[in-house]
Amino acid sequence: MGSPLGDFIRTTRDSIQPQSLGLPDHGRRRSPGLRRSDLAARAGISVEYLTRIEQGRDRNPSVVVVNALADALSLNSSERDHLRYLTKITGGACPTHTRPAPPRREVRPSVLETLRLLEPGIAMVTNRLGDVLAHTSGYESVTCGTGLLDTDTPNLTRYVFTDPRARTFFTDWDAVADEQAFDLWLGPSVANSEWFTTELARVAGPDFTRRLNRHVVPRRGALRLSHPSGYELQLLRETLELPSDAQQLIVLLPADDSTAQAVDRLRRGSHGRLRVIS
Image 1 (cartoon, helix red, strand yellow):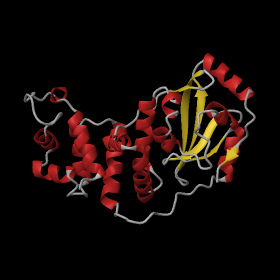
Image 2: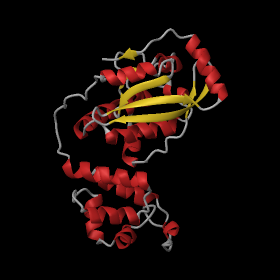
Image 3: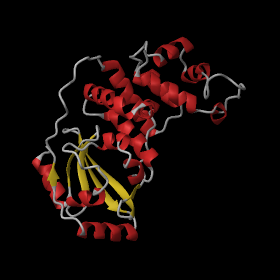
Image 4: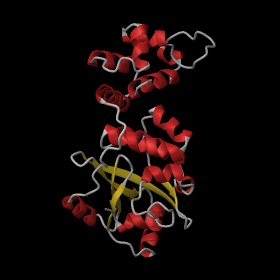
């Protein structure tokens, strides 16, 4: 049985072309990317030890080893953060067979007041599992008709992977799907994330599982939406982390004049209000 840390190291190694690191190309081989022996040599560890880490048989590598692997894989800062996070949860996670208590859904009054001050802008409060906990009328106007907010407990991740309308609504659906899958690794707790991914995998299928285990660190560029009314929207994203609540306040801003005009028309046609979803 593997581990999140081992999966990340292996998939990253498989994605690296030896020539990009100044290593010789050994010709055709059964698996793509960097050889395990080459990575071990660059990190200064044995092949046998690297194999144990990748296969999940060693779940507590030292900080020195983790940093050496990050250097050997030429990881950027975001990828290094993810590697350290996976090291932490791999070493500390305990398997569980019972459903844990759900993450908190309450939004603090001060956060709600901040959301009210953002009206009629486009903003929402969510957590890493994708639960939409509160949103402005502006957010409702740009998602109206897409099905995203149709349920009593809307969840963006579930919507992206299980609602066919999401593939039309999100112009760059592949990038959004990678983002939502990646964020599950940063969920409110390891236990909650594992339970949610297990439940979602049953209905979302192998594409969800594949994206989850690729550990692709998203770039999070502008969000492009194809609204059912015919408007093409391009929105910039600003995120305020609320670490004590394991939540995020996300604000979406028009990236150009045409988007601003379209958003204004959508607002005039909407009669929404600030909504807290309990």
